[in-house]
Image 1 (cartoon, helix red, strand yellow):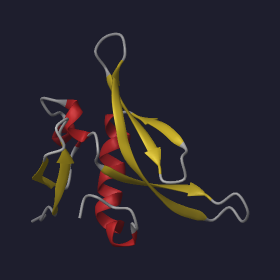
Image 2: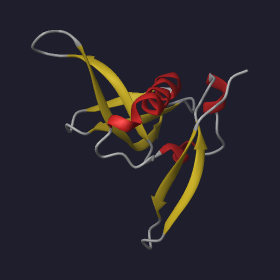
Image 3: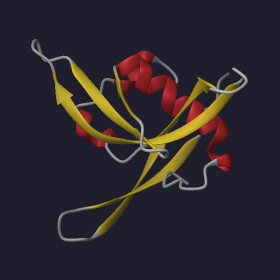
Length: 114
């Protein structure tokens, strides 16, 4: 039996009102097929990158900044990392980034998912 964790996501609307929603850990690729891909904007993600000095894996945190549609309706999400680097995620990348964040959110100094 697998138990999925959950976090509370706080988002702010155009009027500055905050709303909170509980978001479960994404355990399969199908879980990411939501009705509104925009729902992931503001979510925190994590990803390992090789350190430029010694090549060891270093964990970086970022936030889903916005979404974009490609021809054919395929969605990708722009990730803005805390060091100001940016990267585009497809659905499977986003699932992995959210799940890795769940595993390491206690190390996130800027986290908004907890």
